[in-house]
Length: 268
Length: 351
Image 1 (cartoon, chains in turn purple, orange):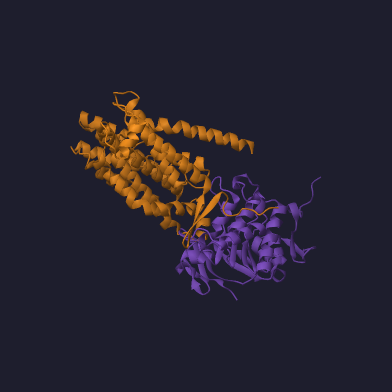
Image 2 (cartoon, each protein chain N blue to C red):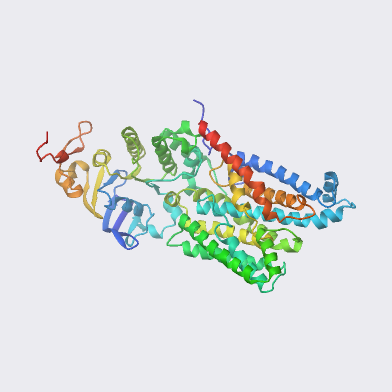
């Protein structure tokens, strides 16, 4: 089953077409990861799935209804989205920022409810930022800040969560921390998660459903262990590689072959 | 560990029937302080002048008791005080809204062309012999709104881009300013002098009749301002995040700018472009409340304090010569803002 689907989706910035006639069904309750080389249209596709970009052709469907025709506030109760580089207002505190995730559930005359309180507390505990509640977001480290943003998206309490390269700018331990968090949310809460990642190995490790894109089209999709092969890597990234099982998880691990042009004789 | 106070840090919850409203505690305190300060400034304003009236006497007159000084206080000073309050509050709110939408603390009605639009049309009208203070406000209101519409139309390209909004505003402001200069050099000497005073911003000769537009506008726009105070929260996030949270960004921004532009235009129409109030008041208020967005109520109160104090000084500093209020608003607000910025740097450096 898929609550969120793209049908013959064509996306363009001004008159430059980035994605053409893309069909995609996001499996419910799973972690879907979209990978591909730079400028392949993966982030653009994610933005369209979260109605940040209006399709030039085709449609994104949420529960069978066209996203472009739904009120944006109603969409916000079903789909949470964290953009690649969100910007926090200057000097905002962690708790204040996280509580803004409750926006779609609030109204002018109903600015705070028990439900809001519970959702925000829960989101902050889940992402381990409760202790930072009164700190200014400006003063946090990159990893902490990313967790706060995820907490904000979680406080929105949507069944679908779209994250655009949530690991960018993070060091490796923070990358793993964020991805583990996403994984837990999916496993424990049954949230449907869509991630855009550019690291193929992370994608293969965390995805239930992997979507490989190239030049605005889906090249392959399915469980990582079935689709990640040396041929796919060459086809999508133009890189020769060896694919071995990950020693920890058993998922496919892509090891780039022929380093530093190793076919050439080594100069001494 | 003890329970974490999650409810957006530093807020209190006010329940009324089925409604619930978040109140930022520090903002409420600051607003209270500003109200006291404003009350003191108002009493001082009514006391000081050609003829001094004791504060106790002023309070008794305000409570309706007969007094030989009643005429001076109620007929001469009070109407002008009301203009100062209304104009200051309107500029404070307008500046806050425009800075929020532009995401730029330097954006204000006197930077992005609203004052210049009002100015160009007003000076043109003066040049063509229209000098009535009851008609001129409406002329300049139209000019301000027209200029803002022009800026908005040019800055709109499938959406409003904050930086483009400010840059186009500055461009149009420059173009309009040269138009003003043209009218002033072409026009009669006396008209030019009168226009120059208007351009500085002056409360001289403004009474109940002249302040009617601004009083009505403030009253009618009150619901819109209450909406804006809440709507500002989401607009202060980046576009993508705000949209993802279900905010109709285009509509909300247009609403915020519209309220700001109408207030700024009407205030300019009544008192002329009183410089720096709309620029300074929101920033001073925000630094006092330490909120993530500009606190509109505190910004309005700060604007009112600045204009009342500046006009008080303008009337008395070089008495019997009276300085236009616009000359002194920057002098009243700017040092305080600079002090706030310097102090916050020092605090920020320690953490």
